[in-house]
Amino acid sequence: MSIIAPEIAVITPEEIRLGTGDGRRFEGVEHGAAVSYFYVDNQPGQGSLLHWHPYPETWVVIEGKAAFTVGDRIITATAGDTVTGPAFVPHRFENVGSGTMRLIGIHASAVIIQTVVD
Image (tube, rainbow, N blue to C red; front, side):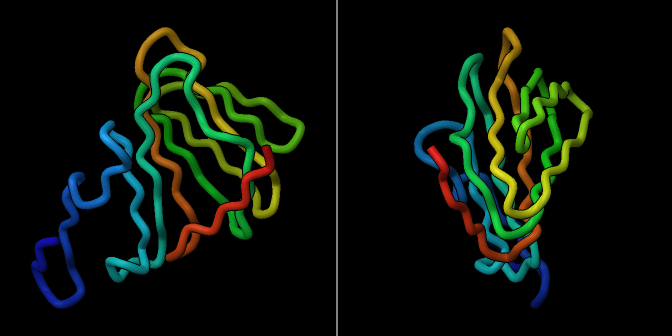
Protein backbone atom coordinates (compact mmCIF):
# COMPACT_ATOMS: atom_id res chain seq x y z
CA MET A 1 0.00 0.00 0.00
CA SER A 2 1.35 3.41 -0.96
CA ILE A 3 0.48 6.26 1.36
CA ILE A 4 -0.04 9.53 -0.49
CA ALA A 5 -1.28 11.51 2.51
CA PRO A 6 -2.39 10.42 6.00
CA GLU A 7 -5.96 9.74 4.76
CA ILE A 8 -5.23 8.66 1.17
CA ALA A 9 -3.86 5.27 0.04
CA VAL A 10 -3.38 3.49 -3.27
CA ILE A 11 -4.01 -0.25 -3.02
CA THR A 12 -2.63 -2.30 -5.89
CA PRO A 13 -4.53 -5.31 -7.28
CA GLU A 14 -1.80 -7.64 -6.01
CA GLU A 15 -2.44 -6.55 -2.41
CA ILE A 16 -6.10 -7.64 -2.44
CA ARG A 17 -6.09 -10.41 -5.05
CA LEU A 18 -8.27 -13.48 -4.48
CA GLY A 19 -6.41 -16.65 -5.39
CA THR A 20 -4.54 -16.77 -8.69
CA GLY A 21 -7.14 -15.07 -10.91
CA ASP A 22 -8.01 -11.42 -11.39
CA GLY A 23 -10.65 -11.30 -8.63
CA ARG A 24 -10.09 -8.96 -5.70
CA ARG A 25 -11.54 -8.43 -2.21
CA PHE A 26 -11.23 -4.93 -0.75
CA GLU A 27 -12.24 -4.52 2.89
CA GLY A 28 -12.57 -0.86 3.68
CA VAL A 29 -11.70 -1.19 7.35
CA GLU A 30 -8.16 -2.28 6.39
CA HIS A 31 -7.62 0.84 4.30
CA GLY A 32 -9.48 3.62 6.10
CA ALA A 33 -12.58 3.38 3.86
CA ALA A 34 -16.25 3.14 4.86
CA VAL A 35 -17.18 0.74 2.00
CA SER A 36 -15.88 -2.61 0.74
CA TYR A 37 -16.05 -4.35 -2.63
CA PHE A 38 -15.40 -7.46 -4.67
CA TYR A 39 -13.94 -7.12 -8.17
CA VAL A 40 -15.20 -10.16 -10.06
CA ASP A 41 -13.74 -11.59 -13.28
CA ASN A 42 -15.81 -14.63 -14.34
CA GLN A 43 -16.03 -16.85 -17.38
CA PRO A 44 -19.37 -18.13 -18.77
CA GLY A 45 -21.30 -20.14 -16.20
CA GLN A 46 -19.24 -18.88 -13.25
CA GLY A 47 -20.77 -16.84 -10.45
CA SER A 48 -21.39 -16.55 -6.75
CA LEU A 49 -23.19 -18.78 -4.30
CA LEU A 50 -26.56 -17.68 -2.95
CA HIS A 51 -25.86 -15.46 0.06
CA TRP A 52 -27.03 -12.34 1.94
CA HIS A 53 -25.57 -9.39 3.85
CA PRO A 54 -26.94 -7.26 6.73
CA TYR A 55 -26.53 -4.19 4.48
CA PRO A 56 -27.38 -3.34 0.84
CA GLU A 57 -25.13 -4.33 -2.05
CA THR A 58 -24.72 -2.54 -5.37
CA TRP A 59 -23.23 -4.17 -8.47
CA VAL A 60 -21.75 -2.34 -11.45
CA VAL A 61 -21.32 -4.51 -14.54
CA ILE A 62 -18.11 -3.47 -16.27
CA GLU A 63 -18.05 -6.05 -19.06
CA GLY A 64 -20.22 -8.89 -20.32
CA LYS A 65 -23.66 -10.09 -19.27
CA ALA A 66 -24.76 -11.14 -15.78
CA ALA A 67 -27.95 -12.59 -14.36
CA PHE A 68 -28.66 -11.48 -10.80
CA THR A 69 -31.05 -13.40 -8.59
CA VAL A 70 -32.27 -11.05 -5.86
CA GLY A 71 -34.94 -12.63 -3.72
CA ASP A 72 -37.45 -14.10 -6.16
CA ARG A 73 -36.46 -11.82 -9.07
CA ILE A 74 -33.96 -12.50 -11.85
CA ILE A 75 -32.45 -9.41 -13.44
CA THR A 76 -30.20 -9.52 -16.50
CA ALA A 77 -27.66 -6.72 -16.77
CA THR A 78 -24.92 -5.83 -19.24
CA ALA A 79 -21.88 -3.56 -19.29
CA GLY A 80 -22.70 -0.15 -17.85
CA ASP A 81 -25.74 -1.32 -15.85
CA THR A 82 -26.04 -0.94 -12.09
CA VAL A 83 -28.12 -3.39 -10.02
CA THR A 84 -29.00 -2.98 -6.34
CA GLY A 85 -30.03 -5.48 -3.70
CA PRO A 86 -31.49 -4.76 -0.26
CA ALA A 87 -30.10 -5.90 3.07
CA PHE A 88 -30.96 -9.41 4.28
CA VAL A 89 -32.29 -10.56 0.88
CA PRO A 90 -30.55 -13.65 -0.56
CA HIS A 91 -28.86 -12.97 -3.89
CA ARG A 92 -26.35 -14.33 -6.38
CA PHE A 93 -25.01 -13.56 -9.84
CA GLU A 94 -23.82 -15.62 -12.79
CA ASN A 95 -22.06 -14.88 -16.06
CA VAL A 96 -24.73 -15.70 -18.67
CA GLY A 97 -22.82 -14.26 -21.61
CA SER A 98 -20.43 -15.88 -24.05
CA GLY A 99 -17.29 -14.04 -22.89
CA THR A 100 -15.68 -12.63 -19.76
CA MET A 101 -17.95 -10.90 -17.27
CA ARG A 102 -16.45 -8.30 -14.98
CA LEU A 103 -18.29 -6.51 -12.21
CA ILE A 104 -17.75 -4.72 -8.94
CA GLY A 105 -19.95 -5.65 -5.97
CA ILE A 106 -19.99 -2.67 -3.60
CA HIS A 107 -20.76 -3.41 0.04
CA ALA A 108 -22.23 -0.61 2.16
CA SER A 109 -19.95 -1.58 5.03
CA ALA A 110 -16.30 -1.19 5.99
CA VAL A 111 -16.31 -4.94 6.75
CA ILE A 112 -17.67 -7.64 4.41
CA ILE A 113 -20.27 -9.70 6.29
CA GLN A 114 -21.66 -12.54 4.20
CA THR A 115 -23.88 -15.49 5.05
CA VAL A 116 -24.00 -18.27 2.43
CA VAL A 117 -27.44 -19.84 1.94
CA ASP A 118 -26.49 -22.85 -0.25
